[in-house]
Length: 365
Figure 1 (cartoon, rainbow, N blue to C red):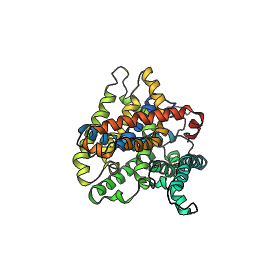
Figure 2 (figure 1 turned 45 degrees about the vertical axis):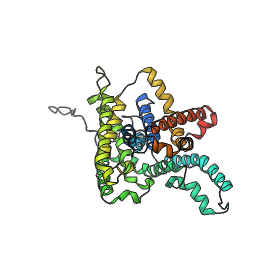
Figure 3 (figure 1 turned 135 degrees about the vertical axis):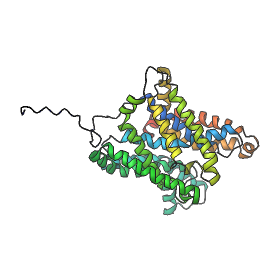
Figure 4 (figure 1 turned 135 degrees about the horizontal axis):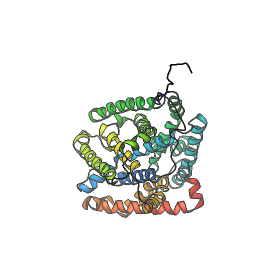
């Protein structure tokens, strides 16, 4: 050491560095499982209860459930950002998604050809039946558009991984702000000219990248978030109150700002209100620490996440046959009965399927 020179103990900034071991992917925890359960419940509600309803409870349930899809992508970003997101990993995930979807699309395609006048040798019809669900072209499996969007995310994951590795958290912040700006412009176009109505949900990729990046950014800064906002000595009720208050504000925003311009729930993902509501809910539930008993139930329900996502459409179809739409129009509170039936039916069916060994194998992506 040179005499008279003090050693440099200045802490090096980590904002621009990539440290794969500093924020390792978290172990399975009740807080993240709780977000998945909430997203699962929201998506069932969103597809069951129409937002245009005289019953204020139904309207509130339908509107606050609008962040189901953002939560899906935020969970993905939170979990995937620190994985080795190279092309091998992405390719395997995309192949797994296609194999998973074929378990549903092939049987339905065969049934359609048995009972409907569809030519067995029509290649275009087969492509529509097998690939169409990823593009919302299916009567029953249109929810698979989400998996189609995830395939696009997996295609971009190696680039996101490399940029994150090179520029660290600074990339996540800059990219999130950039996509938030783009999405907000798209939302403005939605309430003026109905911009995203011309684009199927799979390809509204700016929204899905945004929420993926938000989840990734939360993961990168989670230690600092916990240090700043988590107070073990205080009641966790605040972590519940904030999402509920955000949900009510978002419901009013949809009613008085978006809906009058024809922008339904799916066209609000780019709005600042949706971003704020999604982020507040995500962070608060991450900080919330449920008790042991509740954690066990959350863990059990979270395992039904993927089967419930796919099967709830079949349950809704069945419930609609039992409770016709004409009855629903006459009795506004019947929608609540229908919603409860869908919740119970979907979770029960998902539980039974996951108890079978082959069910666990099928619903593993």
